[in-house]
Image (cartoon, rainbow, N blue to C red):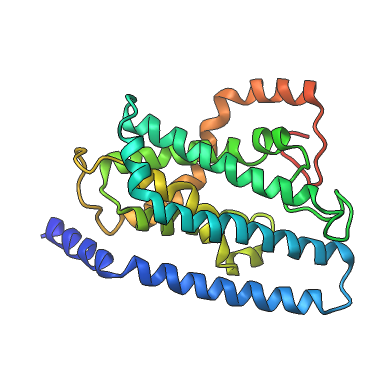
Length: 259
C-alpha cells in the first residue's frame, strides 16, 4: 500500500506541467526585475545601486535569456555529443555542470568589472564577491557548487527526474541559498534561471537507459534540501583551499569564510 501511494504521488508531481511553471517563473521574474529596475533607475538612488541593477539586467539578458534560448535550441545536438564522451555519465554530468557554472560566473564577473561603464566604481557596485575571476570561482561560488552537482549526480543515478524538474528543483535550491546574502533574494524568480541553467542541459544529456526508478514524492523535497548540505563534502580539501588563500591573498568585497 505504501509503495502504491508513493507511485500515485509521484505521478501527481509529474502531471504538473514543468513547462508552464518555467514560463510562469519567467513572466514573474521579468515583472519583478522590470519593476525594480524602473523604480531604481528613475529614482535618486546612489550610482552604485543603479549600476548593480544594470549588472543584473546584463546577467539576465546574457545568461538567462540568450544562454537559455541557445540551450533549448541545441539541446538535442549537445546531448548527442555529450553521450559520446567515453566517461561514466555521472562524471560527465559533474564536469558539464561545472563548465556551465564557470561560464555563468564569467558573465557575472564581467558585469562586476564593467562597473565604470555602468556609472560606478568597481568595489562599490558588484554582483560577485570579487572582481577577480579565479578568486570568485575558487573561494566563493563554483567551489561550493561542485559538491551540489555531485549530489545531483547521485540523485539522478537513483531517480529518473526529468531535466525540466531538475531545472526547477536546483533553481529553488539556488534561490534558498541566495537568502544567506539577503532574505529578499528568494522573491526574485530569476534565480531559478541563474541556477537552473547550470544543470538543465547536463540533466537532459543523462542516458535514459540508466538503472533508475521513477522519483517518489519525497524525493522532490529531498532534492531541494540535500544540495544545501553538500558543501560539507568540501571539508577534506579545506586545508588545501586555505593554503591557496594565504598565498593568493585575494581581495573580496564581502565577508568570506576564508578571511
